[in-house]
Image 1 (cartoon, rainbow over the protein chains, first blue to last red):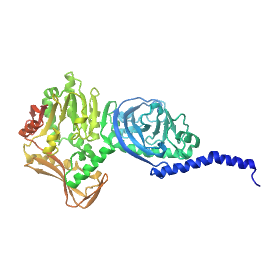
Image 2 (cartoon, helix red, strand yellow; image 1 turned 45 degrees about the vertical axis):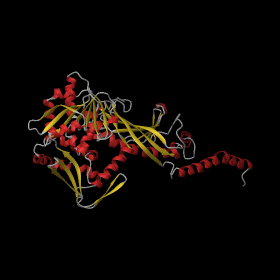
Image 3 (tube, each protein chain N blue to C red; image 1 turned 45 degrees about the horizontal axis):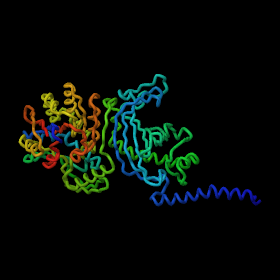
Length: 406
Length: 129
């Protein structure tokens, strides 16, 4: 039987009003994808990653896991440029942040069960080895209320958080209300409309994008923010800030320098610290056999009053190690009624975190992760300063290096 | 450093070079560089690490000797390391007091005081701009 005229007319109307525009957009968006060098809708490029700031804070979040107090130990923030069809017509500069959380129970490394027996270990991340990461992204310049979060936490399902509502994709139907203009979907529609309208087909693109962007950020977090140090007993409850000179550019520069050094047959000692030697050095410096450390500590102890009295203003501890010598000096300064401000400085994030975490809670601490043997002058913004260059750090290079350093 | 800023510098003095060299020739010192090499894909069988000293220059060096041809990737660069090549890793210079005085003078720093340990193997200098 032939379809009725009404049916043909309805189908034609549907084609004209819905399917044709959809396919037209689809063709247009596919050609746009090709123009930008992408093959799939969830393809993306991450560029210009910068780690701006690492703040050590303490914040109880009891609502997250019933009666379990979660401490936000570190907030690490930065910017990056994501070139993705899903995020807009042009590469989008986004601010990102990561919260590294650990529970109070992790402070003592014990597993304790909650009073209500709800099955969650009180030390949600026990033993000081595990940590909880939440990643967030927002378009640069947007207010907090506009935040469209991609999230992923250790071992838990992916989630999307919009305006404070956390939505587990595995557990809940997606519901997004009032998401601000965010980009376009595969058919060229606004992303929020598309998610609302089509849900499943396009959601997977965002999920994939989120997972992969999170993985990109994680590389920087692991390298510069050392989340595992957040659960060290001495690190919890201390507040400090660290400014890392960490970005794609600085990483490229270090790679080029190291490659050239290998060719020339002479490698700067900083690479030994950067590429895993820092932890080894801290072990060595704490050992009985490390005579150098003991001799210097002995001199400082014997002359502590004069040394502490001479180092006034803000203290920059260059090549800080574990910061133990600076701690001795600042303790004396505090006894003398001063309020020292401490800046551990090292090219190795491990050293800076170690020194910052061990500094007294009474001492305002703001560390720097960068190569102080170059471009250091521009980083010092404070008016009256003292510098510590201990541990024979001056001797870690030739005559020119030594003159430049001083 | 600006006028009025202070600096504390701790340096090892060149008191007995043979003794200093011996102090560095420990498994701990030698293994200090292993993590870096391993991170670059140079394993124990690929390179030997040894300590050497130059008494005239008062310098101790940690060196790696490549034992077999090896290619490593650093960032975007591919580096060929030939067996037998020696790369100096760390230089640690040991000082004499007059040398420190010259260095501080060149940097327009005034030595306010210096503190030495009992056997004069180590010194901490207090300087001021």
